[in-house]
Image 1 (cartoon, protein in one colour):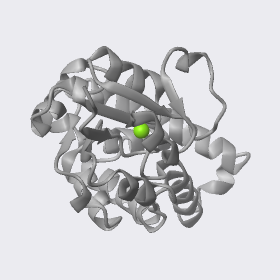
Image 2: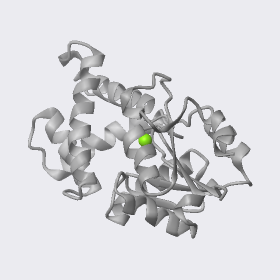
Image 3: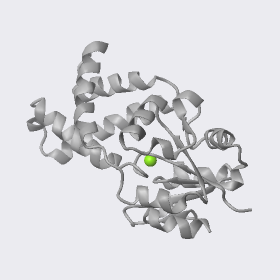
Image 4: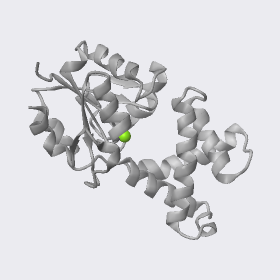
Length: 229
Ligand SMILES: [Mg+2]
């Protein structure tokens, strides 16, 4: 049975999260006078990402809310017990730099154009609906997607099959008629396959790797039309 819809991951699949985050945090730390405290920008970035991964995992596990993971990141990164308002203000200044660097990957809109109207489109993201709504609107592509399903409202995050099944239900399609495209071989492509969808890993580094063994792999979104046929 042919694929009728594509569900998309957002960060590092359609939206160049890593580049925007890098520009955002380095710009922010520079402005705050904190960058000089690190051996190199790369070291600062590693510290920021280490904290982000640890605290975001707590959000995805349902342990803390989306806003709380932001505050926890600020406190852990700076090693200071900031009150909420101060942590929010600090993170807000980071967001200013981050959002100034927001951009889609150059192949995102051409891929959506090439796949439409043969395929319907939706979004499934491990994030907050408010954040992704704002991001997709700012990037001018919100209207491309019939649904925007996020882990904060669902209560389930990828790789949990319930996240994928809920998004298919939003599209009113059985999982076997839905492809899922994401930048993580495990959390996106393999997990989608295991939930009964057609998982596709977009490996933008082109490096492959053991994590991606046995999953469908493309190195850019231009290849999607071919792989979905
Ligand atoms: Mg992603």
